[in-house]
Amino acid sequence: PFPALLYIAVPGNSLWLGEAPLTDIASQIVSSSGASGHNVEYLLKLASFMREFIPEAEDSHLFTLEFLVRTRIKENKLCLKSLMGEIASPPKSPERDPPPEDEVGAAQALRVDTFEFTSRVPPKKLRCLNI
Image 1: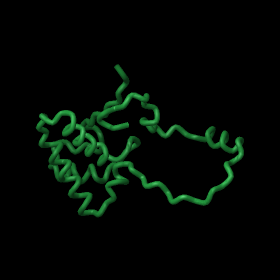
Image 2: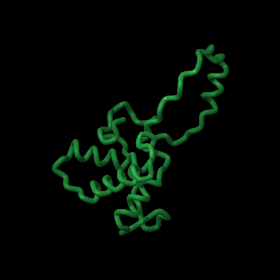
Image 3: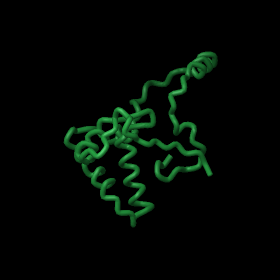
Image 4: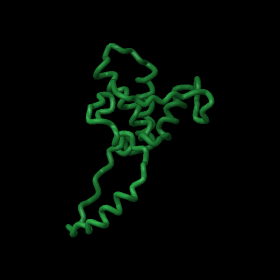
């Protein structure tokens, strides 16, 4: 057993769409993100996981949303890599001397908990998230 975090949307939530048309849900997914990442990343990784590990599952709701979200991304010329959390590495800068040890310690002490869940996940690999 291992701890898991589960989010459940309920009608009292301000972002609850309820029985909205799939096109509306897809638009909301493309325009929404949270502390754990972009909703596009979650949806596309879930669809990929289902195809790879549970190919017999017939989830037309999920796979239609995947198609609609990918269509919205193309129509709006959005960067799929950035939506998936794949940030390009910045250009290399000239070599510099490392900062003094006291500056490194001070920078680490100032770090604020950003609720980055993946940084606290044990080394066990989560297949559905590939982390």
